[in-house]
Amino acid sequence: MKRVVVAMDSFKGSLSSVEAGAALAEGVRSVCADAVVNVVPIADGGEGTEEAVAVACGGRYHYAEVTDPLGRSIVARYVTINDDTTAIIALAAASGLTLLSDEERNPLITTTYGTGELILDALRRGCRDVVVGLGGSATTDGGVGMLRALGYRFYDAGGEELCGATIDILERVVRVDDSGVCGLLQGATLRAMVDVDNPLTGPRGAANIFARQKGAADEDVERLDRALCRYAHVVDVSLGRTGADVYGSGAAGGVGFAFHAVLGCELISGIELILDFANVDALIADADLVVTGEGRIDTQTLMGKAPSGVLRRAERCGVPCVAVGGSVDWSAALDGCGFAGIYDSMPESMLLSEAMVPDCAKENLRSVGRRVAIDFFGV
Image (cartoon, rainbow, N blue to C red; front, side):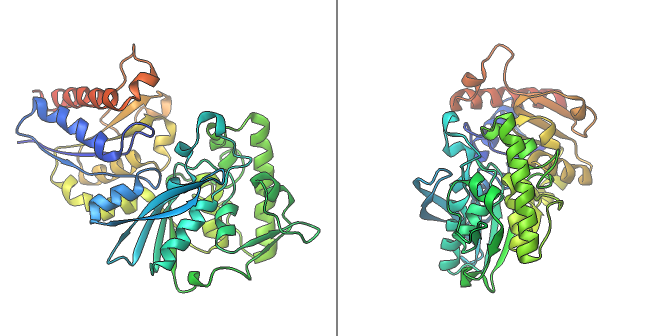
């Protein structure tokens, strides 16, 4: 009897982690009927983080009216665990890229203000431990929106408070004031789950690596990087705190920097915390094969994303691990990276738009599940 652990991240805009894992497991069982397949929902701090924790820990959902990346009113959810004392918040729930159409993407103006509102809601409910997942953002605001919601104030050279577009705040700020910060933050523990190891600025920074996928043109990227450099300098001068080069400070368009340098919080690996919540090590140690994956497998997968975290756990236990992507962007970095196999679930003749239709994505994953079972178990 074969034992398989399936730990799939969500296929953004298509399938949740639960749906992706279930479809792939169906494929494995269809050709290996006696296999014991354990499906573990996972996330790396981005979209689906709250759902993965809720399933793993029996958490409870809460809903709050907040603002989306463009300042519109939406209802977003988060999860509480540990008798409602710990809140797990996905930044993507209020400030995520999937909340916008392609035409609406614009990191010069998008904001994380709604994420700050979710943090405040959790604190007001009595949560004293707040963990925020920093994946899937629509923003490159360095966390200024979130910080403004928490009571930080940003001022220009004339002493006027800056409340406008993200780029306006980042380019004009000369002083950050923390005198009006919400008192509920005192005594509370905040942590940020990061899914990348990028610094705030520079060639591998938040703007240069991620802003284009959020709608930035080349000239916008350069402008945002300069503005984030300025912002980091002002934080240092105003608050005496640095951290632009810290692992993960570039996560979610620089929100990692806001957590570390401004809020003084710990940045932790999102996938590592989720895997601990799910007690996945015990399952992997007893497995013959581990299957992980996400919507797109590429070089970023190896930079702290969920599949790389699962791979590390499997390697520790000496269990082969394969990766499955909704699509795969092959590169030299993927060769010899440790996966026992990398599978592209999208047939060559299929358009991406078709592959992202949920029913089609599920069938593609079932097909991959069958291929994996045949390749590794010879059935």
